[in-house]
Image 1 (cartoon, rainbow, N blue to C red):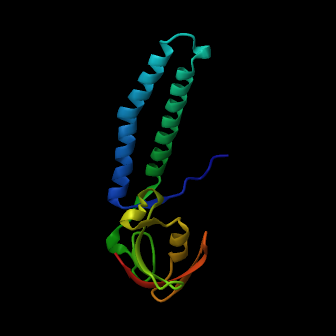
Image 2 (image 1 turned 30 degrees about the vertical axis):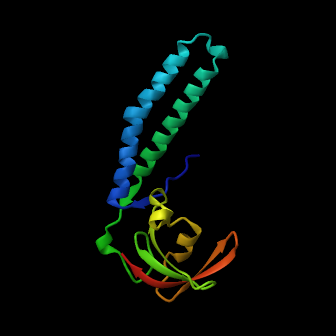
Image 3 (image 1 turned 45 degrees about the vertical axis):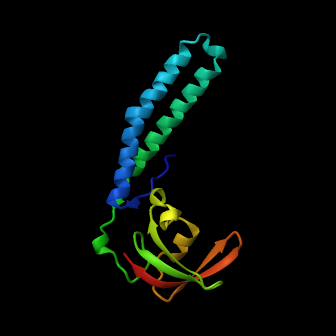
Length: 160
């Protein structure tokens, strides 16, 4: 039974990065993988050639990665940031939250899984915090189950 691919929402920049990665995998990595298989094949008996088996496996994994990225791109939608509803937390909004357990404040932009980068303040809408914040309005609270226990956040501000 075929799995239904989920629609992903991306910025133009994020979608372009995915397209660039697929282009690189197809033009550079695919050639290198094919070359590695050919070189291993030339080394003799394939039944006992671990290098050949490893090269074929690496080539197969590369093809799976390319197919997965192409599927993501085919189901991607670009979010128009000018039409975002800032009355509630949604993808591509920046949200300032207050941790009610320790009064610390944090600022995150909610993005698609592939664009997430905690160092630059971008968290996935599929992360526990992202899921808890989606749809919340300023002043509303979100409870997140973390490894250290439950954390209660309050939405302080929503912006682009």
